[in-house]
Image (tube, rainbow, N blue to C red; front, side, top):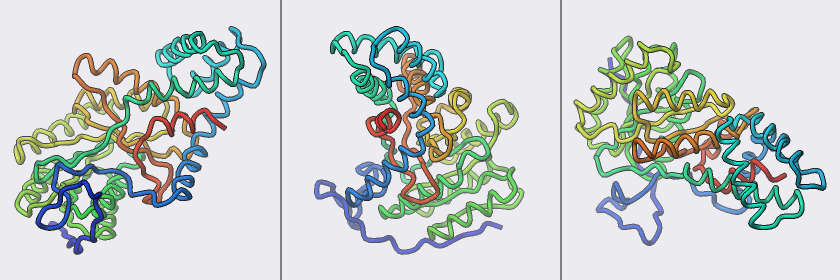
Length: 352
């Protein structure tokens, strides 16, 4: 049987004065973008940046110790190369960063290692800038979001947080429990649906693609703004399971020809270069539209975002776009999932 959790009355929204409002007093679909809950004051913002900085402490300690000397010489660049590789930036991104940094050092005629450190922040920010992106609710009524990722990446928790963000902006959300492989996955998503007071479609032992089809159909019939589909976690090396994901996507398109409008991959920030391998594999099968990077509050090696950014530049040549990082997470609380900002990340990665 399908289990349903009724949606509460939407909270009063406070869109910016420039936003147009529809007859129901909320921003029309396609006009608004899904972003982090507002950081109400400087203390809240500082708290978020502190948590991000703490999460990237391991990487930062390896990088910043390179600049404790007094000379800018080849030894400094060799140490920096080693530190970047240790941070899981990967050989290609490391070579790119070093080449760009040397060019900046020459242009700015830097004389002190601390100046080089500041220029490194600029180089990383410029590289990571391409990963910035905002998840927008498109004018599709509903906007169908398919979420995938390996087990343990924080996929279902990220869906719960995203649902809360949407609800805070008065969007009606329908959840789909299409993860029928993992024990208790359906129950976990139902808990989030109950907490957010949104409807969920789930079925014990059902075919994942059938659940996805029924959910999109229900979203259309009930005039939901957004349908979020939770899929089973699986390794990209599990070919039969990756084919199941491709099947889910095809079936979604039968229910709503333009869907899914977003295909998001949730990756664990602690997995280093393995995260890039996951991005490549899932993108090959599903044509990803965005990423959510979680667990940056652990022993994360933040350099892997540099390698994802560089890969994204290559992807543009074949597919016309990269895969942006919509959100990064540094904890379990709702406010611990925030939009990715290259400048904030670069500073947290390098500055003490």
